[in-house]
Length: 206
Image (cartoon, rainbow, N blue to C red; front, side, top):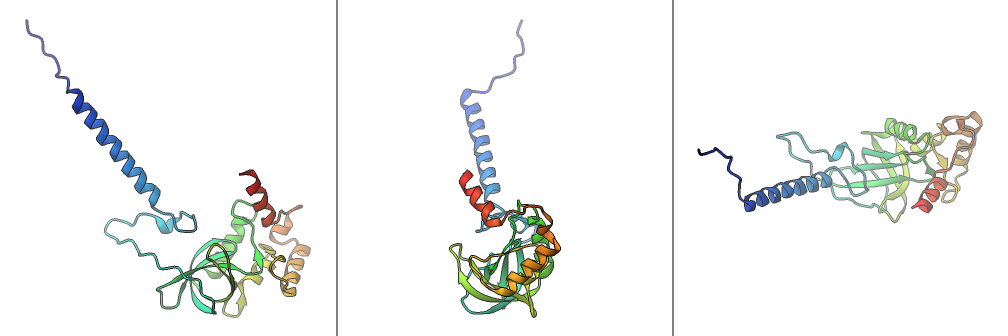
């Protein structure tokens, strides 16, 4: 009596199916890894895949101006670093605030420092006075919103250190001392760690 047996696909057919599946996985992984990261190593909402039907915004060319300029803040990376789209909207620059050093994002008060900076400048028009250019192609400069010195505001709030290694501004020194005495922000800690010490220790562990 004949029996009904399910046909077994040839081995070559099974192999090609597995190969196709592996190819799909590799392509999907590559696309996912490429999405969302910008040239400073950050992956944030600005890099998400656009909604269906929407075009991805073209990334503006990055520049390092040496003369004072104005523009709109489009991103706050941490408590002392921002991105500014220059007037005209065709170029952008990464700015490291001169004279201060904010806690790293993984440090106590790192998130609070970033929130304060966002509240001060995000989407606002600012004026940048370049002082130097660092090895990361950032403009190191003073940032003003109107007449307000943004770096001084962070020092006064106790959300940044005066970076005395690079800046000798006595006004910044007084703002840090006042914040320490009042135990504002990071100075409410018993033994706050300076961000440059934190970075040095992190490098040694690598």
